[in-house]
Image (cartoon, rainbow, N blue to C red):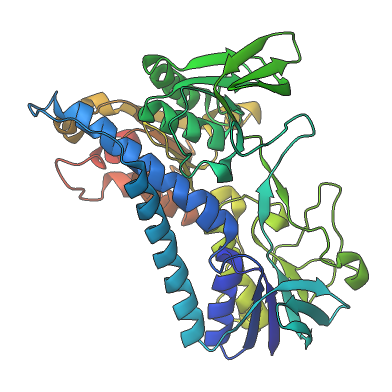
Length: 450
């Protein structure tokens, strides 16, 4: 089986290693960095910076716990740390691929037909023949026509890891996951931050109670929330920038950070030549096996238009490799995107999985909702951080856990328990009957399931 993979991000490299371990002859083409541009240039650096900000917060909290502590950011050291993390992850991925016998080509790929892929490298041209092809070319930050990015005062997220200096007053446009993470990060670093919110609350697609906790934290940090404001233009005058909104409001600051989503990297792939359908937004849709309309050509990761999560992309890659190698006749579970866990690395952390309370009510579905605040949790009190809550949504007839939300310290780790419950149709009683550690934040899961 000759398997050609275009893109070396979480979807591509997972598909490559699994398929190679199953006996496929795998060739992977990556034009930027093996490990994934979105993963290594977006996700990992931002989370590393957020972790640094978290440590600053812990230093502030240390005084409440009877300690005297101060902290100052060394940006040179921080840049070295971020680069070191990226390098270690890149090396880990490439070493694994090499150990599996995957051929890696640094270059740009183009579909020449349903079974042929052209590759342009620094050394010339090459044509590969494939029995199966995976398109996993990822995405890049969306830049509207009205946003004159200059990399100095008007920035995309990829120009902020970290910036040359802490902005005096940063205007963040976009209040989705990326926008609130960067708002949190820069406010922790000491910037004055204004967040332009196009709706009436941040995180418009999330549970309103979750958004309310985060907004309260932003207000405590003196973050200005410009609600119901849709940005329409950005102007720079010297060392100042101005953001104009459609309703006539305007805000000025020292820097602007654009966090208004991403666009798929599908242009120039030759999908039209190979007969692969690309939708109006540039995504390449697939069926439950991630097959495009051309059965032996697959799509995964951000380009597929599914949940833009590294975890989802990696699982898509695994499932595609199994399908390519014919394992669907044996034990093969289809991906259920509705059961994917996700997290937002703000302060406090936010995580969710499965159906949300508001979503269930909107659909007229009967549910049982149990909510427990961390203020009643011994470990949260010991740690000096009792913000947030655990919310579990279950079926009132069967007790099966349908979903849940967690806001608070360690939410990204704690949500794994609920993710396992949702994926395996466990009941709330199954969680209650588990002998959890005391004192631990996870005890709140048992209490919420009671």
